[in-house]
View 1: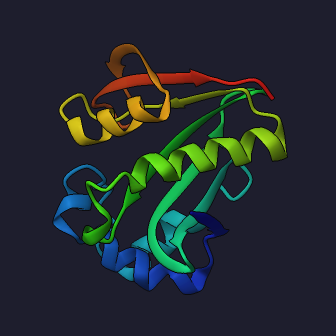
View 2 (view 1 turned 90 degrees about the vertical axis):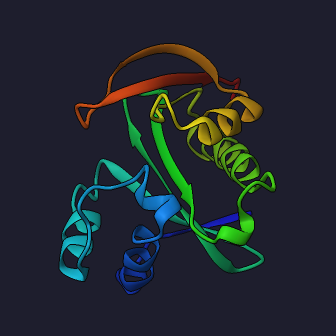
Length: 153
């Protein structure tokens, strides 16, 4: 897995991915036009860091992180390409991403908050080393299954 920063030229692909049923079910921010995707994914450039997940240089998904404090980041991701689902790609992606952020930026705690009924995501994050913390209301106003992982630098 590799990660490259999201660029404006990726917005049409991101729009296409956001319309896929297995993505839209869990990641529906109303980004259903290129204009909305552009506005949403161009905002907060100093606080949300966005990347395309690649497998052998092929774009297969999206991952982002945002700072919670000096050593802690929140994360979100999805695998868009359906032929990469249920093959450990999500687990490999998040594991590699956490390693990269730890080595390059010194982050030691990682937080993620899938929907409580998104069992595929929860299982993926558990396999990557995330542990259940609590069920609470997420930033989107919906219930979230908060999980965290701590790692040494």
